[in-house]
Image (cartoon, rainbow, N blue to C red; front, side):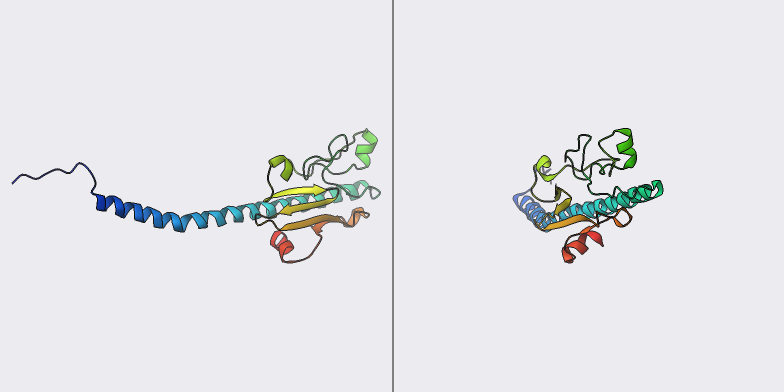
Length: 171
């Protein structure tokens, strides 16, 4: 008796594999979409933390210099004093003014591009003067500002509205 060698899959085997791949993709794709949104939120949490640490450090530097007359009022000025990236540079302090430098020290080593520059409408940062807004992947606006900008000793970066959305990024 001669045994026949098969050189291809049967239609039943192919159908079975396609059904399994379809079931796996139906389960995996929604999970991956949620994971991406979680990553964007986690990045925003890290950004808020980094900005808060940078403000605290800058505030301490100014206090140690005895520079209480120049509180932190902006986090996004370039050398010409023009608003550019989000969290680019602090407003000028006494040493910057004395040296004739228009811009202060950097807030973040790598400033964050705003939504318009990125061509995005959510999952990004934008700003308006001294108000900074994170737009969640769901399109919810979470607004931040520099609290007590008139007092260098108490500058803080916090939400405008203390709600569940604020707690999402400041936990």
